[in-house]
Length: 501
Ligand SMILES: [Zn+2]
Image (cartoon, rainbow, N blue to C red; front, side, top):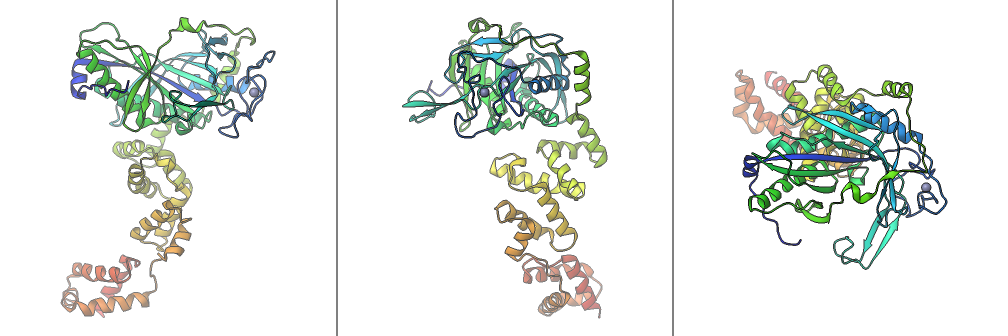
């Protein structure tokens, strides 16, 4: 397991094999209470403080279904263009693991609440790929294990393990795609774009906080390869709990190159779960994958079946918000964006941020300029999502406002943004602390203008002779003298006035 896997060059992989993907996304619903008890549903907290006999699996305790959980599942199903079951049941998925105190997970098996849907996914270059959805079903989350004493945080080598059941019983929707075929070299990108589109959709539905870093949205990526002349799918591996968009893409790509090397060498793929290592972008082997039979599913006897009336389903359909894809089209029109500008905006994940900045009073063009250029570069170099930068849309709008009122130049504005990102406070506070205000006092500027003209009499002469473009050298000198804190346009005006008089 520690041996470094042999990998095939990616270009060779896609020349010899067709990748087939299957993506399983788990999303925690942000209901007030857990799925089958009244315990509060919140991330974190002192271990085992958000528990009760039901979510601890104590004998004699009985579950009750959370109606809001069912509502969330139906809305997700509808947004994914699924059919909604007229009648379905929960099932017990039996397995022993210490983070699952009941020794079974309450899930759904052959009767999911939503099935047969699709999600259209837009790739970076604008190509749209339709990903078919097999099902979306309801289940509950497990608790968390903390393995103490080992080097890796895994159970192997640990001295002891601690268990926290605060998360046990949190409503979970598992969304499973049908096999995604025919994407070739773009398979890793399709996987990332799908999870990204799904995250946008779930955020728009307001059913989850979709925080991948906190585990409220997690992706298991199934990957297999077919030789070009094969007619059947190859054996797949399932890389579990990949927790960022970038990691989804990397994990799929890594598995393709690893499996291809094994297959080309005459070996066979072991059907197993694998773990993704964030640090080096590799995957490592886990347990051999169980089959459905191993779980001895049977209908949950303690819960009544769920039969959502068609009236209720239609009422819920009416609550669906504008879908992200429609919103994009509307925004493109409203902000007069070219296809390319829209794509740039989407690629850096800035749509919501720009919209919020516009709402806070900035113009779409200026808001876009900041997020897509300066701030996207910043996020890139920090390796974080744009939305996780320590600056808010309101603060960006404030900086833009300071520029348009003439209090800041563009150059100074960049410095102010750096100050906000460094945690020095609001834009105005940074301006004060760093003393970044534009020198708008004409008399102070005129002193600098006169000095610069005196220092470069030949240039002054050229300007006087009508070569207005030569003023640039004087503007530069004044900007330097005022440490960039002058409004270049005003400086130019003063130079012309001075030379002309
Ligand atoms: Zn409970």
